[in-house]
Image (cartoon, rainbow over all chains, first blue to last red; front, side, top):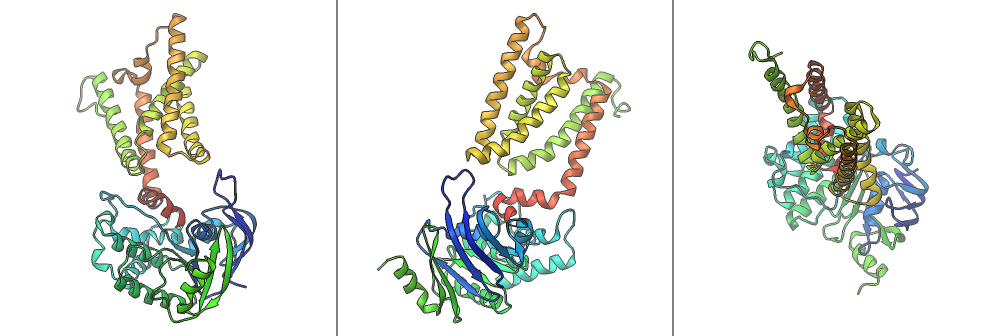
Length: 242
Length: 169
């Protein structure tokens, strides 16, 4: 059984009259590098947010990390890392990079518990891995978009998730930072943690087999393994873009 | 409590009330402004205003009516924002206008019926006419605020940072 098992799921935003995802099934195994592609408004972000229970599944069944998503949404979110697509931190936000990375541990800690030495060590390790340890004392609102994105990735690495989901993680990053982070993602995949990445930038994908999922209008139109260099041509073909 | 510093009992009560109110307001003020919910202050004060007017109209304790009506309005903010897909600030604006309308209507009605009541008295009260029990109630509210923030500090700080990211944690 996969880490993620979605069976004929439908999801809709609260108050929405039509489902955004319609009868979607997907299976993700440990250590898979899943790339989710497709045109704008295909439902890619909605799929990620359905997997960690941020958007309610109205029909179908879903199991994530061995938990029934419909019953244990909070438990699932503690085990799933999610780097969100759009974030804006105002320049006066008082939180430092170190505090933001530590927040990644809060779900694991649970209610009423204070971070321990091991939590501080995990946050420090995540900052070192992403290369932002020298920014630890700076407030996040004063950083560049790329540095903020790295902080959010470190925040999710500190969480020590069982599934890592990334929504356009390279949108603010230069080529050097992209390649560096792809290296980190490869390490994560090697440790049997699956990565689900929504992206429109396919340069620097790891030289492993990619589980490619192409979505269009809330449906999966392609779901198969391929090599890294085949990702973009397949997405172009599936989306009829030449 | 501050009797050893201020001899005049009336002024002493007023200063004690202001100290306790400022403790609670300063702590909650930081949280509220970081969550971009600044309008919650005047919305809740006017909800209490409407609640007190309802209490006077129904001849029940105005203080209790104000507390329950305010809690009712506070409980509506989230569900209305979610269902109507409105920003919380817009919902607060709607609830503020509604509370104000209820309060003004009832006060005008009570004045017509010959009840000596002014909007100013009901909305702002009078800091020099506080009873000792009311000071204790304010002290309890301040203590509860501090305890609440200390106990849930990590949850509150996550929400203050970013609501969506806090949801995903």
